[in-house]
Length: 313
Image (cartoon, rainbow, N blue to C red; front, side):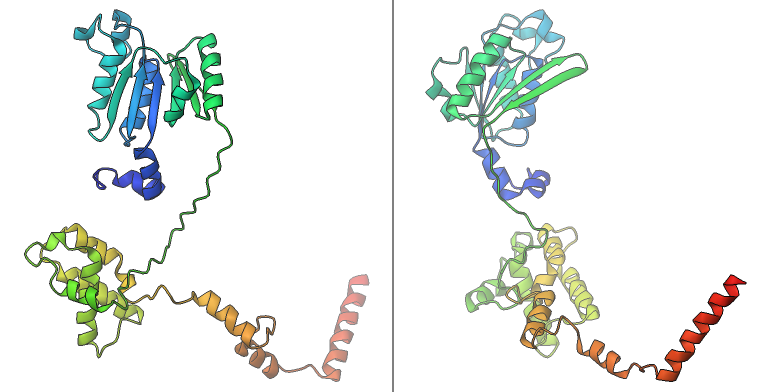
């Protein structure tokens, strides 16, 4: 499976979500317009496989609403035709066709999701009972012109998967081990576009340190200079791995094992005796602030009393 093919959705639900999608097996009951359009939106993102269950043949009425049948398909099994055309949308997806759904609860346990489209109430009720017993989610879709409805039946579903925006992966760029340095020194020099950005950063940060007395970038200006250094190292423009190296340049000077600054400050205050979070600067300011004398305090009270008398007048 090509990662660039699914790049946009990988940014949305991550590798774990795409893996769950690519191993899913969806069954569609009813290869009508609502059903095939629903399944299309699962095929394109890359489900693993699907099965269409439909006993109808292609009729003239299907040609007016269903994009996944053709005029040359009139009289053919509608499910088989739809499975062929939907499967052609994504080579990563395996398609199957069956004319009936076997009347066996165990038969549904191999599916990840059941989609029922435009089925009669008795069929939906029976299918819902079977899905509930097999612990398989059921989605019921119906459409009539511009009006549609979606009903979902699912048992309790717990998902605990946080995706923090700033994960500090330890790629050992700031402190590479010897084998990684050796690999970075000769990384497919004749094919620069094939070098992973991690190796690029390992090599470039070592070059930067040799030019800067062994020091990694520290100041804001130095960090920007290192980014320019990375950008200038690209042998040609628009190389994806060099663009990735530029976007991830901060990993070259950041050690993920370091505690965040907020955590270090909290631990420092705790080690100092937990003085309610006051900094030394705050304490000095309090020590240097003048204390009002008794005369100043008395004068302030007299001024307030005079103001009250004027207001009464």
